[in-house]
Image (cartoon, rainbow, N blue to C red; front, side):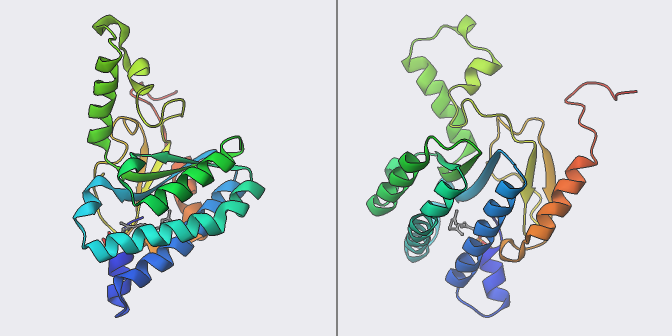
Length: 221
Ligand code: FPP
Protein backbone atom coordinates (compact mmCIF):
# COMPACT_ATOMS: atom_id res chain seq x y z
CA UNK A 1 0.00 0.00 0.00
CA UNK A 2 2.72 2.43 -1.06
CA UNK A 3 2.42 6.12 -1.83
CA UNK A 4 0.36 7.56 1.03
CA UNK A 5 3.05 10.10 1.90
CA UNK A 6 3.53 11.26 -1.70
CA UNK A 7 -0.22 11.54 -2.20
CA UNK A 8 -0.45 13.86 0.80
CA UNK A 9 2.65 15.82 -0.23
CA UNK A 10 1.17 16.41 -3.69
CA UNK A 11 -1.88 17.96 -2.10
CA UNK A 12 0.03 20.00 0.51
CA UNK A 13 -1.47 17.88 3.27
CA UNK A 14 0.23 16.22 6.25
CA UNK A 15 1.36 12.60 5.72
CA UNK A 16 -1.32 11.50 8.18
CA UNK A 17 -3.98 12.55 5.63
CA UNK A 18 -2.38 10.20 3.11
CA UNK A 19 -2.66 7.35 5.60
CA UNK A 20 -6.29 8.27 6.37
CA UNK A 21 -7.12 8.16 2.69
CA UNK A 22 -5.09 4.94 2.31
CA UNK A 23 -7.28 3.33 4.93
CA UNK A 24 -10.38 4.20 2.90
CA UNK A 25 -8.76 2.57 -0.12
CA UNK A 26 -7.96 -0.52 1.96
CA UNK A 27 -11.61 -0.82 3.01
CA UNK A 28 -12.85 -0.52 -0.58
CA UNK A 29 -10.33 -3.09 -1.85
CA UNK A 30 -11.14 -5.59 0.90
CA UNK A 31 -14.87 -5.30 0.17
CA UNK A 32 -14.43 -5.60 -3.58
CA UNK A 33 -12.08 -8.59 -3.19
CA UNK A 34 -14.67 -10.33 -1.04
CA UNK A 35 -17.37 -9.57 -3.61
CA UNK A 36 -15.12 -11.09 -6.29
CA UNK A 37 -14.69 -14.19 -4.13
CA UNK A 38 -10.93 -13.76 -3.79
CA UNK A 39 -10.06 -16.14 -0.99
CA UNK A 40 -6.83 -14.64 0.29
CA UNK A 41 -5.94 -10.96 0.32
CA UNK A 42 -2.79 -9.67 2.00
CA UNK A 43 -2.18 -6.00 2.76
CA UNK A 44 1.35 -4.89 3.64
CA UNK A 45 0.53 -2.41 6.41
CA UNK A 46 3.78 -2.08 8.38
CA UNK A 47 7.22 -3.55 7.81
CA UNK A 48 9.91 -4.21 10.41
CA UNK A 49 11.84 -1.43 8.66
CA UNK A 50 8.98 1.05 9.18
CA UNK A 51 9.96 1.43 12.87
CA UNK A 52 12.65 3.81 11.57
CA UNK A 53 9.95 6.41 10.76
CA UNK A 54 9.37 9.36 13.11
CA UNK A 55 7.71 8.08 16.26
CA UNK A 56 4.70 10.40 15.78
CA UNK A 57 4.01 8.77 12.41
CA UNK A 58 4.41 5.26 13.84
CA UNK A 59 2.03 6.00 16.67
CA UNK A 60 -0.44 7.65 14.27
CA UNK A 61 -0.37 4.53 12.08
CA UNK A 62 -1.10 2.15 14.94
CA UNK A 63 -3.89 4.44 16.19
CA UNK A 64 -5.38 4.46 12.71
CA UNK A 65 -5.08 0.71 12.39
CA UNK A 66 -6.71 0.21 15.78
CA UNK A 67 -9.66 2.46 14.90
CA UNK A 68 -9.97 0.79 11.51
CA UNK A 69 -10.12 -2.71 12.97
CA UNK A 70 -12.58 -1.72 15.70
CA UNK A 71 -14.78 -0.02 13.11
CA UNK A 72 -14.60 -2.91 10.64
CA UNK A 73 -15.18 -5.86 12.98
CA UNK A 74 -18.90 -6.04 12.21
CA UNK A 75 -18.23 -5.85 8.46
CA UNK A 76 -15.67 -8.66 8.71
CA UNK A 77 -18.16 -10.80 10.62
CA UNK A 78 -21.02 -9.99 8.23
CA UNK A 79 -18.94 -10.88 5.17
CA UNK A 80 -17.44 -14.02 6.73
CA UNK A 81 -13.87 -12.65 6.55
CA UNK A 82 -11.14 -13.98 8.82
CA UNK A 83 -8.45 -11.54 9.97
CA UNK A 84 -4.98 -13.07 10.20
CA UNK A 85 -1.68 -11.37 10.99
CA UNK A 86 1.62 -12.03 9.22
CA UNK A 87 4.35 -10.77 11.52
CA UNK A 88 5.21 -10.55 15.16
CA UNK A 89 2.60 -8.50 17.02
CA UNK A 90 4.34 -8.72 20.41
CA UNK A 91 6.38 -5.61 19.54
CA UNK A 92 3.25 -3.54 18.80
CA UNK A 93 1.75 -0.95 21.16
CA UNK A 94 -0.44 -2.76 23.70
CA UNK A 95 -3.77 -1.19 22.64
CA UNK A 96 -3.20 -2.14 19.02
CA UNK A 97 -2.21 -5.67 20.01
CA UNK A 98 -5.31 -6.14 22.16
CA UNK A 99 -7.66 -4.97 19.38
CA UNK A 100 -5.89 -7.14 16.81
CA UNK A 101 -6.15 -10.19 19.07
CA UNK A 102 -9.83 -9.47 19.70
CA UNK A 103 -10.67 -9.12 16.00
CA UNK A 104 -8.62 -12.21 15.07
CA UNK A 105 -10.38 -14.25 17.72
CA UNK A 106 -13.90 -13.02 16.75
CA UNK A 107 -13.30 -13.86 13.09
CA UNK A 108 -11.19 -17.00 13.36
CA UNK A 109 -13.92 -19.38 12.17
CA UNK A 110 -14.85 -17.27 9.13
CA UNK A 111 -14.32 -19.15 5.91
CA UNK A 112 -15.13 -17.06 2.83
CA UNK A 113 -11.98 -14.94 2.78
CA UNK A 114 -8.75 -14.61 4.74
CA UNK A 115 -7.55 -11.03 5.12
CA UNK A 116 -3.87 -11.16 6.01
CA UNK A 117 -2.36 -7.99 7.43
CA UNK A 118 1.41 -7.96 7.19
CA UNK A 119 2.34 -6.06 10.34
CA UNK A 120 5.84 -5.75 11.75
CA UNK A 121 6.64 -8.04 8.82
CA UNK A 122 9.88 -8.72 6.95
CA UNK A 123 10.35 -11.52 4.46
CA UNK A 124 13.97 -12.20 5.40
CA UNK A 125 13.12 -12.20 9.08
CA UNK A 126 10.26 -14.62 8.39
CA UNK A 127 12.72 -17.05 6.74
CA UNK A 128 15.23 -16.75 9.58
CA UNK A 129 12.40 -17.22 12.10
CA UNK A 130 11.33 -20.40 10.31
CA UNK A 131 14.91 -21.74 10.54
CA UNK A 132 14.99 -20.97 14.24
CA UNK A 133 11.67 -22.74 14.87
CA UNK A 134 12.85 -25.78 12.92
CA UNK A 135 16.09 -25.95 14.92
CA UNK A 136 14.23 -25.45 18.20
CA UNK A 137 11.99 -28.38 17.34
CA UNK A 138 15.03 -30.54 16.62
CA UNK A 139 14.07 -31.53 13.08
CA UNK A 140 16.79 -33.29 11.10
CA UNK A 141 17.98 -32.20 7.66
CA UNK A 142 16.16 -35.02 5.86
CA UNK A 143 12.87 -33.96 7.45
CA UNK A 144 12.99 -30.59 5.67
CA UNK A 145 11.82 -29.98 2.15
CA UNK A 146 10.25 -26.94 0.51
CA UNK A 147 6.74 -27.82 1.61
CA UNK A 148 7.78 -28.60 5.17
CA UNK A 149 9.73 -25.33 5.37
CA UNK A 150 6.66 -23.37 4.33
CA UNK A 151 4.80 -24.81 7.31
CA UNK A 152 7.05 -22.65 9.50
CA UNK A 153 6.22 -19.39 7.72
CA UNK A 154 3.50 -17.02 8.90
CA UNK A 155 1.49 -18.17 5.87
CA UNK A 156 1.50 -21.87 6.83
CA UNK A 157 -1.51 -23.65 5.24
CA UNK A 158 -2.10 -20.84 2.77
CA UNK A 159 -1.52 -20.96 -0.99
CA UNK A 160 1.28 -18.85 -2.46
CA UNK A 161 0.11 -15.49 -3.81
CA UNK A 162 -1.00 -15.61 -7.45
CA UNK A 163 -0.72 -11.87 -7.92
CA UNK A 164 1.22 -9.16 -6.11
CA UNK A 165 0.24 -5.54 -6.76
CA UNK A 166 2.65 -2.75 -5.94
CA UNK A 167 1.43 0.82 -6.14
CA UNK A 168 3.25 4.16 -6.44
CA UNK A 169 5.69 3.36 -9.25
CA UNK A 170 8.41 1.58 -7.27
CA UNK A 171 9.74 -1.49 -9.08
CA UNK A 172 10.94 -3.61 -6.19
CA UNK A 173 9.70 -6.24 -3.77
CA UNK A 174 10.87 -4.54 -0.53
CA UNK A 175 11.23 -7.66 1.61
CA UNK A 176 7.68 -8.83 0.94
CA UNK A 177 6.68 -12.51 0.95
CA UNK A 178 10.10 -13.48 -0.39
CA UNK A 179 9.66 -17.26 -0.08
CA UNK A 180 6.01 -17.29 -1.13
CA UNK A 181 6.39 -15.07 -4.21
CA UNK A 182 8.74 -17.43 -6.10
CA UNK A 183 6.19 -17.82 -8.94
CA UNK A 184 3.82 -14.95 -8.26
CA UNK A 185 2.83 -12.59 -11.04
CA UNK A 186 3.53 -8.91 -10.43
CA UNK A 187 1.48 -5.88 -11.32
CA UNK A 188 3.22 -2.53 -10.94
CA UNK A 189 1.29 0.69 -11.20
CA UNK A 190 2.25 4.33 -10.82
CA UNK A 191 -1.03 5.02 -9.03
CA UNK A 192 -0.47 6.08 -5.43
CA UNK A 193 -2.27 3.82 -2.95
CA UNK A 194 -4.86 6.44 -1.86
CA UNK A 195 -5.89 6.78 -5.54
CA UNK A 196 -6.03 3.01 -6.19
CA UNK A 197 -9.66 2.23 -7.06
CA UNK A 198 -11.70 -0.93 -7.40
CA UNK A 199 -11.61 -0.17 -11.14
CA UNK A 200 -7.84 -0.49 -11.11
CA UNK A 201 -8.10 -3.70 -9.09
CA UNK A 202 -10.22 -5.04 -11.96
CA UNK A 203 -7.58 -3.91 -14.47
CA UNK A 204 -4.88 -5.71 -12.48
CA UNK A 205 -6.97 -8.88 -12.36
CA UNK A 206 -7.68 -8.70 -16.10
CA UNK A 207 -3.98 -8.26 -16.76
CA UNK A 208 -3.23 -11.25 -14.53
CA UNK A 209 -5.87 -13.34 -16.32
CA UNK A 210 -4.16 -12.68 -19.67
CA UNK A 211 -0.81 -14.08 -18.55
CA UNK A 212 0.60 -17.54 -19.22
CA UNK A 213 1.79 -19.09 -15.99
CA UNK A 214 4.33 -21.76 -16.75
CA UNK A 215 5.57 -22.18 -13.18
CA UNK A 216 8.99 -23.05 -14.55
CA UNK A 217 7.59 -25.56 -17.05
CA UNK A 218 7.15 -25.28 -20.79
CA UNK A 219 4.53 -23.39 -22.79
CA UNK A 220 1.32 -25.37 -23.20
CA UNK A 221 0.76 -26.20 -26.92
C1 FPP B 1 3.07 3.36 2.65
O1 FPP B 1 3.02 4.71 2.23
C2 FPP B 1 2.06 3.10 3.66
C3 FPP B 1 2.34 2.71 4.94
C4 FPP B 1 3.70 2.49 5.44
C5 FPP B 1 1.25 2.52 5.92
C6 FPP B 1 0.02 1.80 5.45
C7 FPP B 1 -0.83 1.64 6.63
C8 FPP B 1 -2.04 2.18 6.81
C9 FPP B 1 -2.79 2.94 5.76
C10 FPP B 1 -2.63 2.01 8.19
C11 FPP B 1 -3.95 1.38 8.18
C12 FPP B 1 -3.86 -0.04 7.78
C13 FPP B 1 -4.90 -0.71 7.28
C14 FPP B 1 -4.75 -2.15 6.97
C15 FPP B 1 -6.18 -0.08 7.00
P1 FPP B 1 4.30 5.64 2.49
O2 FPP B 1 4.08 6.38 3.76
O3 FPP B 1 5.53 4.80 2.42
O4 FPP B 1 4.20 6.61 1.27
P2 FPP B 1 5.43 7.32 0.51
O5 FPP B 1 6.32 6.22 0.00
O6 FPP B 1 4.74 8.09 -0.57
O7 FPP B 1 6.09 8.22 1.54
